Length: 105
Image 1 (cartoon, rainbow, N blue to C red):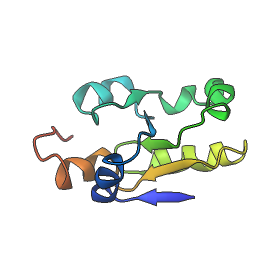
Image 2 (image 1 turned 120 degrees about the vertical axis):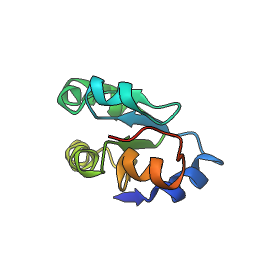
Image 3 (image 1 turned 30 degrees about the vertical axis):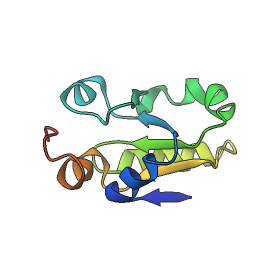
């Protein structure tokens, strides 16, 4: 399973257009999120399995520190969804290395 550090993902996004899925809770997403990402909280992932199985783009999974998104990545793999990338360090690492103007919590 693929993992990228924040700076690696920023470079990757210059040439690729994956689907960015933020698995945090709504209140977290409202504080900060990566532009272009969509909110799909971890608890709603099971109901989105069919949709995610049909996704042809790579899926980048995002959370606060990369732990929940890694758990989601492992869960998706059980359903044969192996075209995902985990953002190591999550939005916290993104804010610290890519977008220092992004709020942190």
